[in-house]
Image 1 (cartoon, rainbow, N blue to C red):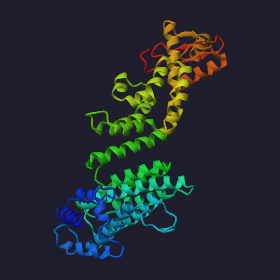
Image 2: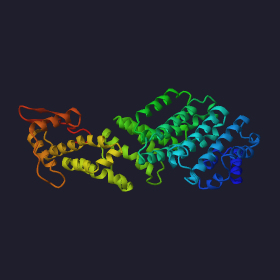
Image 3: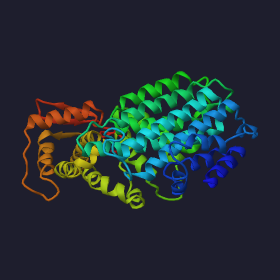
Image 4: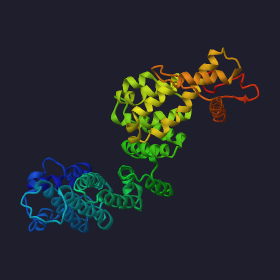
Amino acid sequence: MSLFYNSFRNYLSAQNGRALGGLLNPTNSENHSFAFSSNHSQIQSTVQNELYGISSFRNGITDKGQKAWVDVVVAYWEVVFELERGDTGRQLGEDGDLGYWGRAYSKQSNYTTAISRGFSNSGWPHWLLPVLYTAGRHLRDFAILADEEDKKEGKDANKLEDAARHLNKMFTLCLSDRAPLEESRKWGTYYIVSLLFKTYFKLNAITLCKNVIRALTATTTDMPPLDAFPKSHIVTFEYFVGVINFLEEDYVNAESHLLTALQLCKTDDASPNQELILTYLIPAHLMTTHQLPTTTLFTNYPRLKHLFQQICGTIKTGNLGAFDAALQANEDEYVKRRIYLTLERSRDIALRNLFRRVFLINEKKTRIPVEEFRKAMGFAMAGKDGGTRKEAEPEEVECLLAGMIYKGLMKGYISREKSMVVLSNKEAFPGTGV
């Protein structure tokens, strides 16, 4: 028991917020002895005795702040006691109908509220923000586990929605601080925003992320510049903003934010974070520039190779049948990662590349019969194994050609009287060098 309190006092005295946040981690492997060091009837007095005189330390903690710490440590003990206790000695019907993780979430919710009150009502200094981070992160984790537990038992799974409300209050707590910037809770804003974004994505409530972004935009004059925050906070924020823009089909802004996130990531190895960013950056870049990723990129990131190499190969060759087959083969994975619709749109680029090959085969003549494009469509629709040709109607081919011209993927016009495609003398296929 004394080990926990000795560490607690030492970290608080040294103003070591990160170490204190680690100590108050409910999944800490050293929690067992602390969990069984007291009981519900004695824990309040035990903590009061152990933390007596805490305000005498030169750590910016007032007497009011000391009382808040008592509440927090008691609430923390209840969390770790619940986690360590499990179902041991529990009576049927105790704590309502909550499961193991449901009970843990309930205690973690109370603990998180106590920490928020320490900042809002008791004047806790900003260097204690890591304690808030740890509490918020585990609140979300326990909510997810509790919801999974409830789903298995056929109950309503609503813990993560409740966690989102707690995190939103934390966000307001940080964003609305009026202390001088060097002492402000605003320095915790982007960490809490990242937790909120992760939670909203998990809930499939991505539109709520825009409320957070609007709130940040409205307070830019009172906020430190984004590049002044820890790099990890910036990378996560830029990644989520990039994905939000990606899902709204704003590929230019999506590429900009995702590229910023990638550039700020560690470059010493192919980290999972880089792979996650590239999962959206590759299709966004494909939409904005019509450029395919290199084979070197796939060599460095095997998971991305599995996701993109096959479909990118079909885009490059203009093999429409193989493209459709690759899209269908990985449909579940693409839908899960929310990139299916964007990749489906890349069929236009595959079609452009097919028509470009017709142009090259015809020795770059500027007048090519529609029939030549129709024949090429038949072969392309046969698929990668050269299956049965699927003949396209001339009207369908003309419609596709007109679409290519309208979207700026081809330069020219269709002469319907002569059933001829008249292409531009200069850059008939913009951005491809021909």
